[in-house]
Image (cartoon, rainbow, N blue to C red; front, side, top):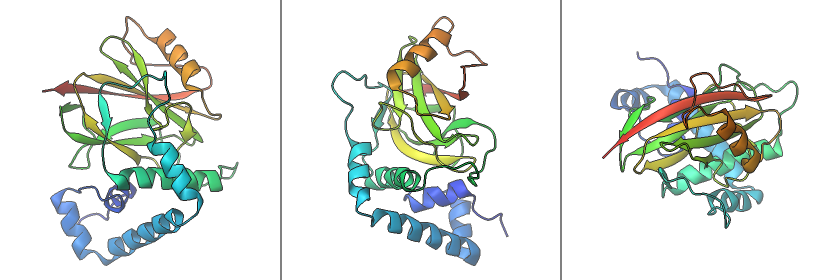
Length: 234
């Protein structure tokens, strides 16, 4: 029998995403994976039933405030479940903040864009739907910035875009969905012990750029970083 579904694949299934055909077939045949999926769905339903959920979802789904930049590469995918799961994850972290003995899986810091096959992609066409996945290496807060082909820095995640959000648990967790628009982009994930303000984080990253490009090794004081580049074609 094929390997059981990973935590990432279970997250995708819970959020209504599409798994690779062989993984969908495995889910249909594997009792253990079906039970895990039902537990994940029940947990998500329990969070969505909390009174705080609607307010959290509204905040995460809101448009950026006046004066904030809007990154040109992405349009928020009009899929309610994606926003709902992001809100659920944030709400869980708010209700149960990280502690010194937190059981989050550390692993290495990473940021990835996940395609329809549930694998990370480095290129895409305009109009494709991708998912953003993060691995915070045990840090409690995360922010993802985008650097376009001209070296401009803009907010990508959290959806509110003004400061770091609670980092997801796990070595790689989907946090949102996007639709690709024109223009290649480098994503830079900033994982920290304290929330970062967008303005200060953008200035810090802009100062670290070389000729408008993100260097292969990016070191920022007190911040664990990860990068991913996406080439976009029409």
